[in-house]
Length: 179
Image (cartoon, rainbow, N blue to C red):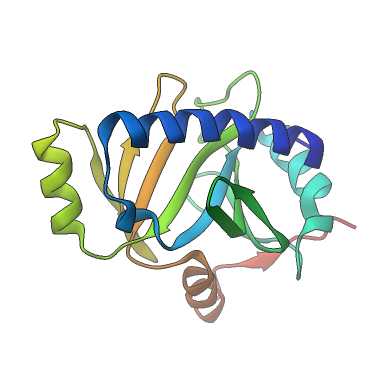
């Protein structure tokens, strides 16, 4: 995925996101702190290409971790990616898990910082909206699938910049060389 394709994929995501939020009348305060936007690449080859193509959009390059037999790249953006009233200053580029490859990459999710998980779970339960509470060693999040394509919204307890800082301190990240 290159920067032009990214803009198109963001617009597709925005339509699903906006529709889901509006149809379900979800509280605006959940989305007041946009964290990052995430691309799920088609496969390993697309992951490498996407990192190379988008590295020029980052402040300090892309940092990656090998997690669950795949690479996840994280980077702070020079210019935010915006849709509607939301601006995302970080991006995550994900290689799919083995066996989860797709025909093409897409914007899979956005994440927002909102640490009151009990409130989120109570509202989602009341509205009969499916979700999963998930975590890895760096943070926790509530994952909500918003369409049949697999797009998601994640409400997290820690912003990506803090997760990257923690992963760097632990020695889990390496900087990609996409020059």
